[in-house]
Image 1 (cartoon, rainbow, N blue to C red):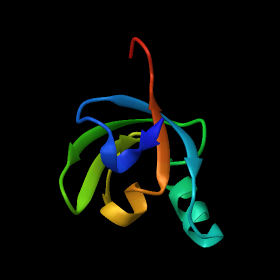
Image 2 (image 1 turned 135 degrees about the vertical axis):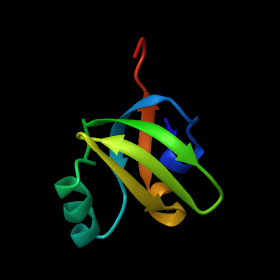
Image 3 (image 1 turned 180 degrees about the vertical axis):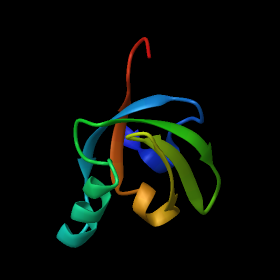
Length: 76
Protein backbone atom coordinates (compact mmCIF):
# COMPACT_ATOMS: atom_id res chain seq x y z
CA UNK A 1 0.00 0.00 0.00
CA UNK A 2 1.31 3.45 -0.92
CA UNK A 3 0.07 6.90 -1.83
CA UNK A 4 -0.94 7.31 -5.47
CA UNK A 5 1.76 9.97 -5.74
CA UNK A 6 4.42 7.27 -5.10
CA UNK A 7 3.09 4.54 -7.41
CA UNK A 8 4.85 3.59 -10.66
CA UNK A 9 3.73 4.78 -14.07
CA UNK A 10 1.78 2.13 -15.97
CA UNK A 11 0.64 0.29 -12.83
CA UNK A 12 -2.96 -0.83 -12.45
CA UNK A 13 -3.99 0.04 -8.92
CA UNK A 14 -6.87 -0.52 -6.55
CA UNK A 15 -7.97 2.45 -4.46
CA UNK A 16 -7.91 1.45 -0.79
CA UNK A 17 -8.51 4.70 1.06
CA UNK A 18 -9.08 8.39 0.36
CA UNK A 19 -8.05 10.73 3.19
CA UNK A 20 -9.50 14.08 2.20
CA UNK A 21 -12.31 16.37 3.30
CA UNK A 22 -15.80 14.89 2.70
CA UNK A 23 -16.60 17.25 -0.20
CA UNK A 24 -13.32 16.31 -1.92
CA UNK A 25 -14.01 12.59 -1.39
CA UNK A 26 -17.45 13.06 -2.97
CA UNK A 27 -16.00 14.92 -5.97
CA UNK A 28 -13.36 12.23 -6.55
CA UNK A 29 -16.04 9.54 -6.27
CA UNK A 30 -18.07 11.29 -8.97
CA UNK A 31 -14.95 11.14 -11.18
CA UNK A 32 -14.50 7.40 -10.56
CA UNK A 33 -11.91 7.49 -7.79
CA UNK A 34 -13.21 5.83 -4.64
CA UNK A 35 -12.29 2.83 -2.48
CA UNK A 36 -12.57 -0.42 -4.43
CA UNK A 37 -12.17 1.21 -7.84
CA UNK A 38 -9.31 0.42 -10.20
CA UNK A 39 -7.25 2.97 -12.03
CA UNK A 40 -4.05 3.08 -14.08
CA UNK A 41 -1.30 5.58 -13.39
CA UNK A 42 -0.46 7.15 -16.75
CA UNK A 43 2.06 9.78 -15.71
CA UNK A 44 3.59 11.05 -12.49
CA UNK A 45 5.80 14.04 -11.87
CA UNK A 46 6.74 16.15 -8.89
CA UNK A 47 3.52 18.19 -8.86
CA UNK A 48 0.78 16.00 -10.34
CA UNK A 49 -0.37 12.61 -11.56
CA UNK A 50 -2.50 11.59 -14.53
CA UNK A 51 -4.67 8.49 -14.20
CA UNK A 52 -7.16 6.53 -16.29
CA UNK A 53 -10.20 6.01 -14.06
CA UNK A 54 -13.67 4.83 -15.02
CA UNK A 55 -12.95 5.42 -18.71
CA UNK A 56 -11.66 8.98 -18.24
CA UNK A 57 -8.20 10.47 -18.06
CA UNK A 58 -7.85 12.69 -14.99
CA UNK A 59 -5.10 14.98 -13.72
CA UNK A 60 -4.73 15.30 -9.95
CA UNK A 61 -2.52 17.63 -7.96
CA UNK A 62 0.31 16.07 -6.01
CA UNK A 63 -1.22 16.92 -2.64
CA UNK A 64 -4.49 15.20 -3.55
CA UNK A 65 -2.63 12.20 -4.99
CA UNK A 66 -0.64 11.87 -1.77
CA UNK A 67 -3.89 11.38 0.17
CA UNK A 68 -5.20 8.56 -2.07
CA UNK A 69 -3.87 5.19 -0.87
CA UNK A 70 -3.57 2.44 -3.47
CA UNK A 71 -2.22 -1.07 -3.94
CA UNK A 72 -1.06 -2.78 -7.15
CA UNK A 73 -3.53 -5.21 -8.72
CA UNK A 74 -1.69 -8.53 -9.15
CA UNK A 75 -1.64 -9.79 -12.73
CA UNK A 76 -3.30 -6.68 -14.16
